[in-house]
Amino acid sequence: MLSAPVTPHAVGAGVFVAFEGGDGAGKSTQARLLGDWVGEQGREVVLTREPGGTELGRTVRDVVLHGDHVTPRAEALLFAADRAHHVASLVRPALDRGAVVLTDRYVDSSIAYQGAARELACAEIRDLSLWATQGLLPHLTVLLDVAPKQGRARRGDVHDRLEREGEDFHDRVRRGFLDLAAADPSRYLVLDGDKPPEELHEAVVDRFRRLDQARAS
Ligand code: TYD
Image 1 (cartoon, rainbow, N blue to C red):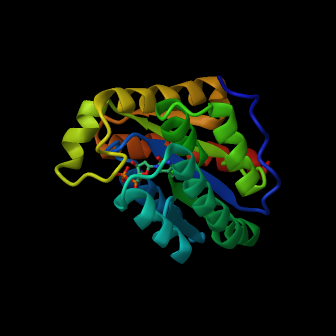
Image 2: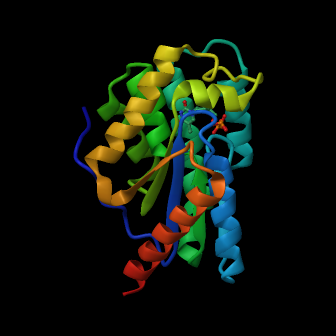
């Protein structure tokens, strides 16, 4: 289903971590907790998200999540446009400064939602994102895995355009994420999103520390 993994391009002294998972998986909480922890170490931390990490991105977010029907290819291009602008104007400059950049969703969300779930070709969606970002992949992706039913229950009643999709769609999203992690395990930390947030945070910090040490040596 997927093409061969791509090595991240050189990105200054910074560390780039993505948090991925289905809707309501708890990735925003984990990104924030790691951000607080990194900040306490006296390092610059940039906590951001897709779609909507930039001003242009907030406009794209509104159109793609809260507008009328968007055709699948247009949807894929809108997420890719958000990502291109986000990476060029915010993520790369921060990594070049040596910051720790934590993003709530990245390339894998496009592969899982627009590729696996909308059933566009995963390899094409991946190539589109790699073109948009000039090949920038995270050093680490934390995947919070939860059953779609569980995610839905946690989200409550407010649903955006993607969240309103049916059970099958969200099952394919979940499978898409797990397949990506299985294809390149050294770049992933897969966690059971049902566990308590503090326990998940400990596992994230532990893995982050090891990544940091490996990059320093
Ligand atoms: P998000 O703001 O992370 O919502 P939540 O906090 O509820 O998980 O993401 C918004 C929606 O956008 C989410 O349903 C997933 C979707 N999405 C894609 O379909 N493709 C993408 O490339 C990205 C970044 C997000």
